[in-house]
Image 1 (cartoon, rainbow, N blue to C red):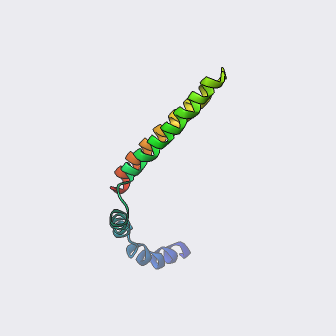
Image 2 (cartoon, one colour):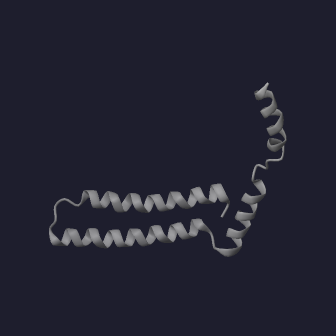
Image 3 (cartoon, rainbow, N blue to C red):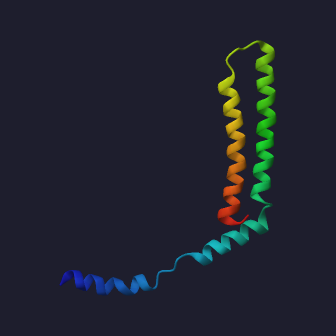
Length: 95
């Protein structure tokens, strides 16, 4: 009996719950009005990471360091992450 009473009392609360679609659309419009494309920003950051990584790797080569492959992969994957992050943000939020 208690379960039925609790169910009947909370049924209207579930009916009035909103899925949050309007808030997502409002957030999207705020982001598109305030900022330029997140994809463009991620490409710029990836290019900066690529340039910094290339300079550091070149410096390691000139200094004669033999083990720099971990640093090469770290800089490469950080730039790749930024490119994929921009595509993800564009797909999810449309910015």
